[in-house]
Amino acid sequence: MSDVKSAPPLAAIARSLRRERERAGLSLSELAKRAGIAKSTLSQLESATGNPSVETLWALSVALDVPFARLVDPPRPTVQLLRRGEGPTVASERADYVATVLSACPPGARRDLYFISAEPGSARESDPHMPGVVEHVVLCSGRARIGLLDDPVELEPGDYIAYPGDLPHVFEAIEPGTTAVLVSEHV
Image (cartoon, rainbow, N blue to C red; front, side):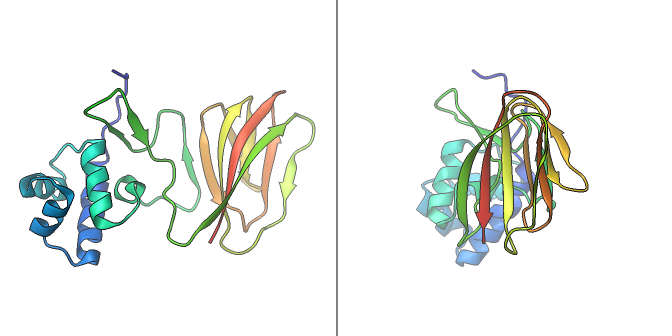
């Protein structure tokens, strides 16, 4: 099994389950029945005392008709940074498999995905994009300073950052061979 030390974000899962169940107008019994789990299991999850598996949360997300990530991705500040090994994680009970949520896709969002290759020398300073754009970056290799123009963050391979793309921002390679995956989210 993996050497994962993070636990599922139980309080965030509990709040999300309650919120989504109430939004759907379902009782504990009805949601448990639709998800094929015991009512007592759902009750424990909503009180943040359960230990959910990927399979249980997946069944609940299907029964609630919401993305899986919405149940485990807690609210974050406008600028979010996850270092390698951080983020809400949930392990499978049937396989050596751990799901780490980087960012939940909000309803109605559009995303463009880019592979970035950059070399040291000059920073790529970007003017603000359309209102509501958020950029998500995972650094693959090298090192870079990425984020808002007035406060970029130094990232290493495996680090993740999200920032408002509708503000001036920068991507500056610090090491040769710097690569990243960038997702531009348009709402």
